[in-house]
Amino acid sequence: MADRISTLVMFGATGDLARRMLLPSLYGLDSDGLLPDNLRIIGTARTELDDAGFRERGTSALQEHLPEDFYAAGIAERFLSRLHYVPLDITQPAGFEGLAKAIGDPCHGVAIFLSTAPSLFKPTIDGLAAAGLACPTVRMALEKPLGTDLESSREINDAVAAHFPEDRTFRIDHYLGKETVQNLIALRFANLMFEPLWNSTHIDHVQITVAETVGLEGRGDYYDGAGALRDMVQNHMLQLLALVAMEPPSDFNATAVRDEKVKVLRALRPIGAADAELATVTGQYARGAIDGEPVPGYDEEIGRDSATETFVALKAHIDNWRWKGVPFYLRTGKRMPMRDTEIFIQFKDVPYSIFASRGATTRPNKLVIGLQPEETISLHLMAKAPGLDRQGVRLREIPLDIGLANAFSEYRRRIAYERLLLDLIEGDPTLFVRRDEVEAQWAWIDRIRAAWAEKGMSPKPYPAGTWGPSAAIALTERDGISWNE
Ligand code: BG6
Image: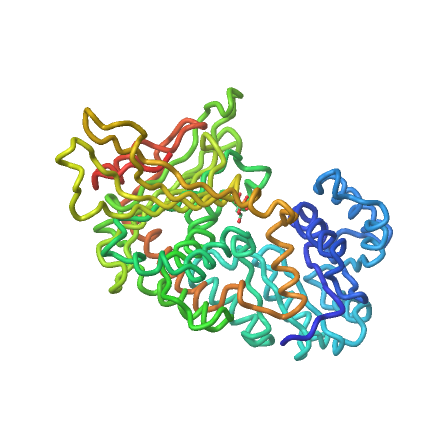
């Protein structure tokens, strides 16, 4: 599968993802000369548009979402000339023939990117197959949500697998396209010093936080049926956890990396009804303020009473030799005080302090990998404060900070989708999620949801602009641990 494709078909081409992410990402690749010269991009959606109309939308998407100094009219002109549009009503099989005609001979390599409602996946795939578009030179990329639970995800996976074998199926988790997420793999496996310490002998616990300041962003219809557990934990956070916890793969290739991730996902200890109240917390934002600006509560935003969680905190365990007894605390929420995505590794303290007799205390080392808003790696070490130490030794924790933006200032910061779209175009599935991973993720999440239902747990309110309900603090404090803030 190393052949580059010559046609990229975008289902959902008039949607938000295409406008904010996909078109700007493709432009970025084009401006760096990375798209195949002959690549055509065919957008399709129900809206009646022609090529010119789609190009007009493309222009405004680029102008709105690219940094001003990156948008160049000359490159935009070349890029826009790649865009074509075929209106298509997925429920009408005839439309697929029009699409097949626009694509021409699929032997030249086609990638199809589905970012539509999951209920449309099956009819779309059946329509494509009936129009002769499921042949061995066609790849299928699927954007989340891939179902709402294990059963519906299996149905989607079965529908896809009926026409597209796994090696031509590219399930997107855009977190895997983020530079810092890939840097986590480099940090762990391109340096000698971390791996010997990366286990329960030396690591006390791990925290993964994905905090957002945004609320519903006009996606209420989808979000209210999903909630934070399914929207963020099932996919992005479990992928981060798997990358932190996996064994060293034998190679940086799709099979080796995904084999290791799935082992972690399968080793997640189920959280059932007996543990749900102690191991999970859910919340929903109420009216509050972010950066001094008042923001409405969730119910108010959505216009009705809702029991959907916009915050979740969990204590997870991975039942294997490496991680025995090491809690992984995960939390994510909307309308938090700041945008902050980080992985925090808390090491254990030195086994014995030679400085105790000199009045100094040591603090255990920490490694903080910041993903957003800045890409940073920060290793907190103990150092002696300058001085003659007449009143005893003074030790202080100091960070060894690497800002990746500075360290690699000559590189452009890319949108995560640039990497994923290029890998799709070139046929490299390493950073895409395999079926067994998605299903292991759903199995774990379904169990938690069933436990919430069994216990009648509902989200606790938290004022917008705070770090979630106080129970989230208690979740870690019970173990003598504080969230890294
Ligand atoms: C999406 C979720 O998958 O990820 C959104 O559906 C969320 O609710 C988004 O806001 C967060 O992505 P990022 O890249 O901004 O952290």
